[in-house]
Length: 529
Image 1 (cartoon, rainbow, N blue to C red):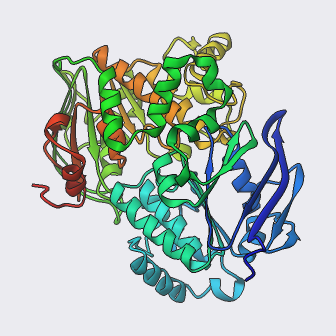
Image 2 (tube, one colour; image 1 turned 120 degrees about the vertical axis):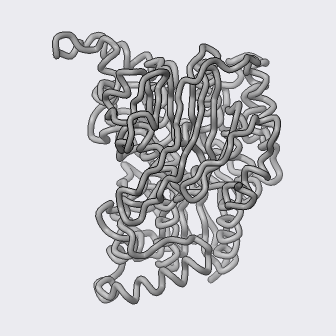
């Protein structure tokens, strides 16, 4: 194909939601074989633009050109017919169907009914790209990382000419990210174009040859990220807002965006006051739990002690029992014996989710849309789901004034955009929804907070805000357990850290006595015991 013809070009794309401008006259062009980064803060309009290109959202104005000719992409089916694939931040999967069936649904009629043939190709692709997924598993049995692999496999199956990736590394380990990047470079070398959205600037600089920067729905820059410093990229994304904040805050924001993985730990550790841990607040003793479905992971003799005034991290590659551990700790799954899980002096292994919340256990699940919120409800209504015990009810009746004030306080404190309490949860970007969910749980001041992927999909400034709030909880004698695949996050936050592998949890080590290489090896089962 003639290199002078763009694979994709969008001209003057605009889109608004109820008066809120998501995209305003956006122009973007991608060459064959190009890996283009898409940068911007949460709410800058990245997800809306990608959904327009994929046919999930209709633009209010503008034109789309595919390989030199104008096209009307009015549905994902029409995008797929052009060989456009998208990996979603919020997974677009049928939970009750298998991996094979989910991929088959997107195929032409002549192919979709031959499931054995589809499965064989999935197995081949899975082996070639080391994505490791079982074709026969129902999607609802997959953890977050495995669902993301399925999304990537689905695009690879279609031999996409344009691959759109919305925060694809948010829940991947460093090793998995390296493998993914090797795969993406190979795909691009074969002529596939890639649009890569990420808040991790070092990843964008490593992978992308060009980048488009959005701010408040508008394109403010096109650049070669490899030729820019992280600080310059931050200035492009933040713009005038940084200048208003003052020199010291500007410098801090630039550090947070531009820091390498080891620097992030040093930056955040300065904000943590050193203090001896208090008494044990959450105790897990010899927890053994069989999976609730044939594809789950058995938990083997889990032993954990989490003290007041500390943050403990559990790292692990997706599919090693994190989902079962979260369910057991939160009360979604009842333990065989009440004494297997203790909250202070109270045995809670037999208590359900509601009872544990009343005793002071907060919880942020790993599935944002499936378990944390009801997408069709407003932020106001979603705030009430877990925070009704904060004086928001009187004799069974909702105190709407207090509920509105409570919800608005969360939106203001965590900079949720759009900030309107009547905004429907499904209309928020992934990062803004995560800020709301974390804010809702932190604001209830639980004695123990269990959080999975606390900064999933948030930009660096929002991540810093969430981290600061968790550290403040720790400094006021709460206990925090973070389960994540992001080692940068765990080393930035935690006082002690361990790993989970095939349903077993390693001993916990103080951060000062370990490093990313050791924990990364444990995540893969090397030197685990």
